[in-house]
Length: 276
Image (cartoon, rainbow, N blue to C red; front, top):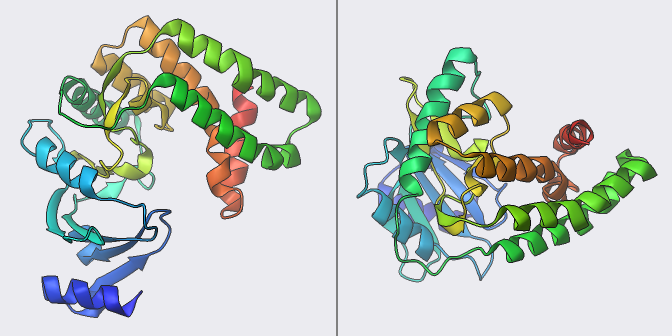
């Protein structure tokens, strides 16, 4: 923990230091969690980090009826150096023990949430065109290829090269693009389940207009994702886009974990092999 940042939190909230826990896992921000998540503070690590979009998105979304628990803005720095937000209760989907009943209950909540979220039309400059996404995924794959080469044989690498350079872009472009206002980073770590089984969603900093398949691709549980798609009312076209994006996800996210988390790398490699 950085002393200066802790002092800011103590001054704003009146809490003692022993109630503050520190997380430095983020790429853009250092995190400080108070009382197990009742309040969360982010302090930027990089000069280009901004919380302006997250503040705008949370202020807007809390005026809607989306049926899930949402964060709300508690404190914001005029110079954009930090953001304090009221958290959502519960445990993350990463740590939640899913069973058949909870998959259905959670999947239905998330599917309905996305159906409502994707119908909104807020003003924002954040737009992710499909061609730009494809370029980003291919660039991240290029960074991850050395890691893949440690675990896969030449034939598998050739297949992945073909997938990332030809099959994926051709398939997604052929299926077309339907941009909607989306969370744009809806993975297991950003979904929380409270003691009553109600879903909460956090981290709307990247939210903007992107193809609707984006909000399904990072859900790791296949059956949960299927319930979400059914509740959402997904057509065959959307299901094919989601299938392709879920297929390539473990390939391009490897670049994030390559030098940090060997266990996660091995799990991702298993997913890559399974998808092949």
